[in-house]
Each structure stands twice: as structure tokens, then as C-alpha cells.
Amino acid sequence: GGGVRFLVIDEADLVLSYGYEEDVRALLEHMPRGIQTILMSATLSAEVKALQKLVLSKPLVLDIEAKRPEGHNNADLQQFFYDCKPMDKYLVLYAMIKLRLIPRRSLIFVNSVERCFKLKLFLEQFSVATAVLNAELPYNSRCNIIDQFHKGNF
Image (cartoon, rainbow, N blue to C red; front, side, top):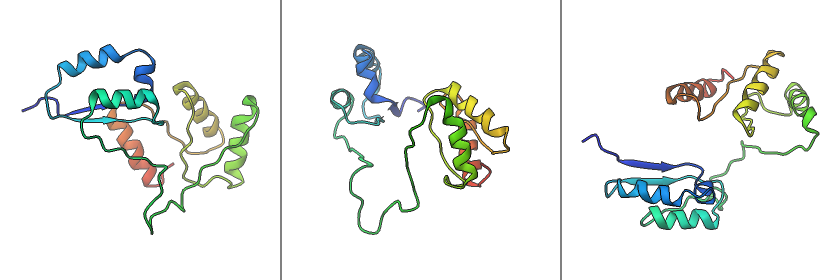
């Protein structure tokens, strides 16, 4: 049938800390047995562990910080942090791109949808091809943006 087969809870670390435990319990009462449930969280906090006990049976925890098996590494991935004044962030980012300190294809994370669009508009003034990817975009649009990114269009 066309019933629910998956339950995905994104930002799981925030769900209980924002007081949604009763809402989750109410939702679970209406879920069919045997659905696959996925919790996604940047941290494995006490709240996530409590939510895990509430919604999962026989959970599998994927820890991306865990040691990787022999022969599997992320040598081609880089992550770094540069501290600067808030008013200088866009200019510093642009300089790093132009000086090729940041690879041609990069993912840059910001903390709001508004900042996504501001950064996009700023970089496009200097002919830097960009795209915004956030949860407010329709699913098909997000998939298309990811495809375009993999093709090197950004």
C-alpha cells in the first residue's frame, strides 16, 4: 500500500531540547509498526539518546568522526575555520576563492537561509557561480542543484 514506510527526524538533537517530546510520542502512536526510522543529528547528546530510545529499536549509529577502515580516507576533503570580523566575512571568502585557497568546487555552510541568499548575491557580483541549497527549496530543486554541483556547474 501507500502507507508510511519511513520516518525521518532531522536535527534530532533539537527536537527534545525544544520540548517536542509529547508531539513525537503522539506522532508515533499513529505510525504503523515496522517503519524505518532515521534520526539525523550533528551531535550524540543526551537528548538524541533519549529520542533514540523513544523512536528506535535495534538502532545502528553512524559516527562520521569514527576511525575509518584501512584504505578509506577523505584525503581529498578539507575543512577549515578562519576567524574574522563579521563585517569582513564575505570579502575574506571572496579573496580566498580568488587566491585559490578554496577549491573551485566547495560547499560553504552558513547559519540561515537569508545568509545563503546574501552570500550568493555577493559572490555573483564577482562572477562566482553559486547555488543555494536549503530545506525551504522543493525536493526536486535540491536534487537538481546537487546534480549540477557534481557536474561542476558551481
